[in-house]
Length: 165
Ligand SMILES: Nc1ncnc2c1ncn2[C@@H]1O[C@H](COP(=O)(O)OP(=O)(O)O)[C@@H](O)[C@H]1O
Ligand SMILES: [Mg+2]
Image (cartoon, rainbow, N blue to C red):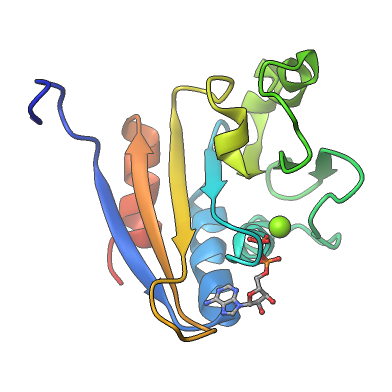
């Protein structure tokens, strides 16, 4: 319980020593993902959100190339489960009607990975795993991945993929 009386959400943090390390964390998330998994990625440009998304795709046996969806807001990939890769960078206002179409209940059949998830605040499903990527030290290859699980399924996924550094 915190001072407001609300139970603290399960959370943790992991260190990544380079893009391969971030990808392998993503791969573990992709392997453990189930229908309805939502990964909400937060972090500055170059933080490693797309590297993580590529790993998730790999763990889902996606064969197509995963890049930041530059000119579209969402790319769909076929894998063990369908992967919906959203990039909310260009989204001006999360209230935009467009946002309503970006997060759709039909995506519950697959896995949603959202880059710039903070720009979709309020539109994200309640059950999700939020991962914030930070560059905590002046080393260009180190990242800290802080996670916070919303809901039991995402807590299990985090424990499985991110529990042990
Ligand atoms: N530990 C790390 N994890 C992820 N990317 C890293 C790491 N160290 C260095 N990088 C580099 O940082 C960049 C991350 O780019 P990208 O994944 O596209 O970021 P974003 O999608 O958050 O803008 C890549 O050039 C990658 O090689
Ligand atoms: Mg990106």
